[in-house]
Image (tube, rainbow, N blue to C red; front, top):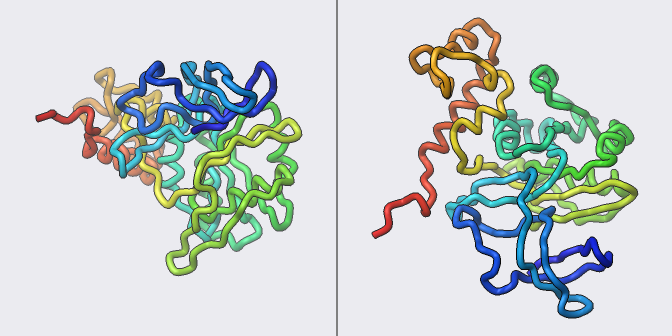
Length: 293
C-alpha cells in the first residue's frame, strides 16, 4: 500500500497497484518509490488504484543485499543531499563516494552536519577536494543554527532527497529546517553508529520546500548498473582521454589515469574508492542474470 497525493484534486489517497497492469522490473526490488509520478484512478474518497509509473528523470538507488536487487529509494529529485557528521558517526569519504555513485541525474549537495562538534583536521581538506570537483558543500548545526538559513535558500524551488548514515542528525536537521517533529534518535555508542529513526522514505512539503527524507543506513552498496556509469560520478575521471575509448581507467593498456594519480592530479584515495566500487559490482551478479536450472 502507498500514500499518493493527487495533482488533480489535492487529496491524499491510500493507493495500491492495479492487478498486474503495471509490470515490475525484475531488476528492481519495488516498482514504486517516494517521488514517483503515478497514473491511476480513485475508487473512493480515500482510495485509489495505480496503473502506471511515469519514467523517472532522476533517482537515488541502492543495492538491496537481502533481496539481491536494486532498490530505488527516492525518485524525481532535483538534488541529492548527502549528510555526514564529523565524528559521531565518523566522517567517511568512501561512504560519500558510494552515495554519489548511487544518485543519478541529480545535483549533489554535501552537508557536514553537527558542525559545532570538534572537526578532525583531515575533514576540511576532504570537503575542499569535493568542492574543487564541482560538488556543493555546506556546514550546518541544528544546535547553533549555523548554515540553516543558507541551506533553506539552497533548497527552495527544488525537490531534495536527504540521505546519510544513521546518526548523522539528518532527521533533526530536517526538523530544524521545516519546523517539523519527525522522530529522532541517539547514536549507539557501543558501535559509534546511529540507530535507525526513519524506517521508510517520507515526502515532506512545507513553506515552499520539498524534501524526501530517506532511512538512515550504516552502509550503502552501489546499485548494479553498467560499469561505465560509475565513472560519471567521478568528475576527475569522467573526461580523461585514454588510448582506447571506453577505458574504465583501471590501468588498462593505454590508460593515462595511473600517471595522473602518481602526479597528484587525481586524488589517490578517491581513485582507490572508484576501483573498490568497480570491484564490488563485478563480484555481484543479480539473480536475474544467473543461469537458471
